[in-house]
Image 1 (cartoon, rainbow, N blue to C red):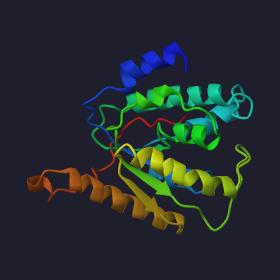
Image 2 (image 1 turned 120 degrees about the horizontal axis):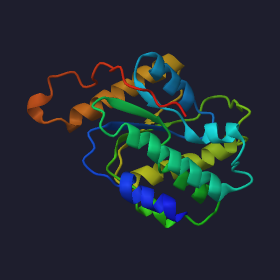
Image 3 (image 1 turned 90 degrees about the vertical axis):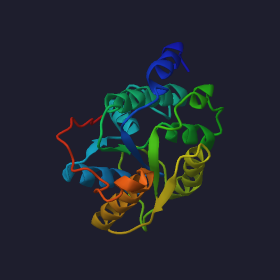
Image 4 (image 1 turned 120 degrees about the vertical axis):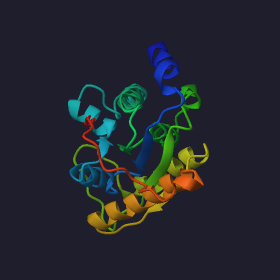
Length: 215
């Protein structure tokens, strides 16, 4: 990892006391994460789009050419996107989080950079692990298959749960039902973190007119 990225983590990535409620939508390729993010955006919720897909579309840094350089750029952009929303008081839904990158290093059999041990572990309120669908749709941007999705899913789960980040699985179901289920899980998570005397208020604030980060 570059020294510049290390300094960014020290400056932004490890900042404590954030009021933001970050919800990670994670899982293997082609499980429906981006569909969930899109539907949440359409309902007015603040979202952060997946960094990796955008970088591949740009074509300058490709994971099958330079895996380490690619993951560094994903991490750099993810940190910037999350830092942008640090002061928000409404839920921010992330299409993947910081520790997805670690899972890809492990899955590829590469040494995991020490920078992942410097990343904040208290930033995420909940990680939602999206389970595989009954079909696999290759989006033409990334070229993994269903076998890869099944292999990396438990690795991703462990990368979050081993750090004490709550992980809940979201099974296969129609997209609208999945979004409703996601919001139920987030409501329960936020409600459980409130002081007892405050638990009569709605758990998820009405979506604010907040700038959307779309990588």
